[in-house]
Structures are given as structure tokens and as C-alpha cells.
Length: 608
Ligand code: SF4
Image 1: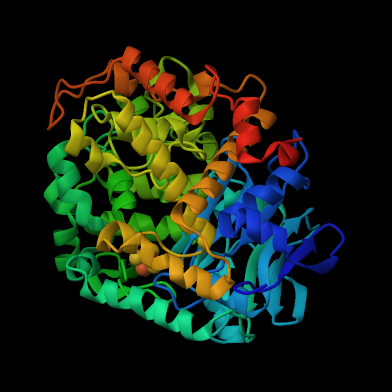
Image 2 (image 1 turned 135 degrees about the horizontal axis):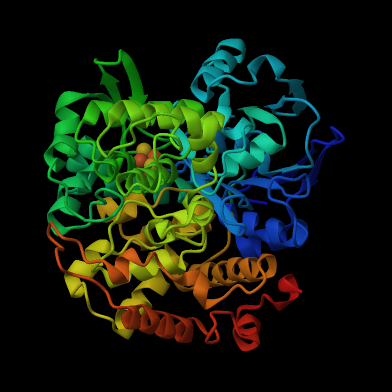
């Protein structure tokens, strides 16, 4: 298959059996790669009702036809599983250099199944593939493990590893790679930990076949030139995602003290400009990236370094915890990376606990003695440690995520658990931003921003408007944006540098030999979106409309301060958004795809 590594690697951790099979051409035709392959294998192979942390669940790592090619940002792969955090569909996109080596080793998809009786790491060096005893690595931090394995094998080997968070089955444990890239959300690291896989070590030397080498070079060059000539390149490269922090603060979208407001009085201390001036020492990019958004930071106070923080971490661990100190945020980022927990969910959980503490719902007895006040930096560091090790009452409570923690504690704390479908909302406050609110409500992994990032669109068209055009925009973004995760390249060159998306099409055709338009690709995106919805419904009895509701904070409690003071979306508007969304998606009033919709998308056979 042109543009593909050519094989699916299946690793049964229970038996130790490792097999390879060719990637079926029809899979490439219908699902293309990356997230598409992940959804397909998850739906087909994970049995209904599987325990997310049991051997029946699978962890599927998949690349796309752009992965590892000379296409801007072609270092993306997807990690797909049944989420232990939400009980539904999860995939996490990871950048860096892992996916390139995977393709060069001739592999499109790695399927981890079963569970090993003892800690192992998967070692892949072209045709040499084996499970190696990882007992000496168990208990170590993900960053330390990456260094140890690189020292053992060489810098050209790419490593993905879990930390103690994954080993201890923290429900939002992540997988680390390249000293700062993560497959972050939904608990993919806990699934890897449940299989007792500490790391994957990868190296490949094979070439990837392409149909039209000259056309591929020409199309790739056109994309790189467009990036180089982009007016946004210098600013983006200087600040990366932190470029939006001050804007979010100004417009009331910066999560502040558990999303009780959208503007932070200490905001300037954590803006991208402050970070660049005070702690950034250099830029860092993924494979083939002409616009590196990664920032290496040095935290002199702690004598440490980290790749980051990026905007989401600044929002969730900075303003959302009331911390106006960029060095402290960066240090918390480093702790989360090494311990292997998702910074967004960790920030969401600690913020919920801080609000509980402020309201007297949690006391020092419940926090194991921590004074868990908003703004308390040392308590934040300690809480991160406790979560990753499931230590004490607090660590065990928060390792379960806000939804379960709030259900356990009760006393009204469910209302300020800021999550959808069990996933903590990422860093955009949505009190009066109806498109972004709908994006969170309907995102297919829970309240995550990367499927449809619409906060700027809200401001362009009127943030409180509830109109069919907004809903159509969200659906278009949900079908279109994740196609970058399917193809295996970064979307940020399109989002931030304004690259014409049509420039990608000649490259795809030259590589795979298949002519596709964006309408064709969006139809694949629509098919994938509906399949993920079916997965949720299959795995959760009673799944439907109620699951799409946001935290009541966004329709009951207008912020008291900041740019959105006094502003709120009504519950009626929340329901109207869902009505319009379901209708435009071709779903019934409970939010389930109708038989007609499934037939139109050609997924009835897969769904049966
Ligand atoms: Fe990676 Fe950032 Fe470049 Fe995207 S823009 S490829 S995330 S470094």
C-alpha cells in the first residue's frame, strides 16, 4: 500500500505472542489511517462491556499516510482505547517522532491486547520485535525511563513510556514521549499500565512507498513554502499555544478558580509573553515541523527543566488553581509529565477539590493535612504526587476524576465538577460562548477542545447567539479537524499559520495514488464521528441526551468578576443547541444516529 508502513502488529501480552498481518487496502480506503484505524479496531475487536482496565480492552496505536513523510508536522499518531475515565470512546493524539519510526519499521498500527503478568517493554527494531522485562523500570518516572532507554539503545530510538500514574491506574494517566509530548487524555496511560507495559521502544530503517515521488516532493515543498511565507509564523514560533493566554483573559475565557470566572487578576504573570521572557530557553518541534510550538523552560527556583507549559496547562494549573506564578506552573507541568498524569484533568480535579475545601465540603482530614486553598503552590505539588501514587484519601479520591469524586463526596459538589461525560473540561471558560460550549458538550471523548475549537468564532459572530449556523460550524469542525489525526499530521499549520487546506490534497494523492477532495475526507470524518457515538451507546446503557449536558456552572452561575461578569447561557439555550445539533447530524431527539443516517454513511455493517 502506497503511503503506508504495510502491516498491523498485534502483541498479545497475556501469551507473549507477537504477530504481523498486512494492512487491508479496504481499511485504508474507508478509514484512511490514524484515528480512523483506531476507531475501526476498537469497535470491531473490543467486546461490549469490556472492563477498560481489564485484558479484553485494547490499546491501539495508529499512524496515517502523512505520518513520517515530508509534510509539515507529520509526527502525529493516535492512541485509541475504551476510556477508564469515561467508560466511552477515547483517543489521544501524540506528536514527536514516534510515528515516523513506526512507519519506517513497516508498521501502521500496533494493537496491544491482553495483560502481561509482569512489567515489560515492547522493543521494535525493524523486524526484531520482542517483549523485554521492565521490572527494573517499574516505579520510575516517565522522563527518567525515556532517558534510561535512550542511553541503553541510542538517541535514534523513540520511546513512549508511562509513569507511576499509569502503573497506579490513575484514570487520567497519560503516555509520555520525546521528553514532553503526550498522548494525554482519557486515561490511555492507565490502560497501558493495566497491561503492565512500561514503555515502547521503536526504531525503523525501511522506506515508505509512494506513487509519485516527483509529485510528492513538489506538493510537500509547496506546503513548507506556504508555512515559511505565513505572516503568523514568527509570532506562533515565539509563543506557541501560550499566544492565546492574554486574549482568553481579556475576553473572559481563561478558566479561573475552578471555572467560576473567565478572567484572572494574576493573569499577566502567566501570559505567554511573561513565560517567554522569564523561563523559555529554546523552541522545540515535532517531526518535520516548520513552526515549532514546543518550548523548553528552565525553572531556576526549582533547578529543573521541562518542555512546556503550553496554554492548556497554564489555564488549568495556573489561573484555574489561582496560581499566578509561571515557574510554579512549569514545575507542576514537569511533575505531571514525569509522574505520567494528564495536566488538564489533574488541574480540573485539584481545582474541584480546592473549591470543596473553600466551601468546607473537604477538610484537612480529607486532604491528608494539606491546606488545599486556591493559590497554594506547595499543596498543588503535593496533590499531584498523591494523585499519581494514589496516596492517602486525597490521592485516591482525585485519581478517579472529578465526576466519580463528586458523586462520592456529594453535598452539591457535583454541580461544580467541570466535566462532560466524565472528562474534565479543558481550558476555555464557556459561560457565554455557545459554540465552544456545544463543542465541549458533543465532543466524542468528553469535554476536550481539539475536535472543534470555536472560541474565537463565538466572538466573531456573537457569543450568546444560538443559531443553526453556529451548530453547522461545530459539526463541520468536528468532521474536518480530526482528519489531521486520521492523516497523521498536525492541524496547527492550518489553524495558526492559515495554510490553505487544499495544498494537502496533491500531497495525499501523490503519496497514496488516491484522488480525494476535502468533501470526501469530511465524509470519512462524519463516518468516524458517528461510529464513536455508536461506541458510547453500545458501552453505556441509557446513553443519550443527558450525557451531553455541560456542568451547571455554565448555565446557572454567572461569573461575578472579569469580562463575562453577569453573563450566562440559559438551560433552554443549552437544550436548543442540542436540538439543532441532533437534527443537523441526522440523530434522533435522544442524540442517537438514526438508521437512515447510518445507512447513508455506510457504517451499518461495521456497527452490527
Ligand atoms: Fe508539533 Fe507544535 Fe509543530 Fe504541531 S505546531 S507539529 S504540535 S511542534
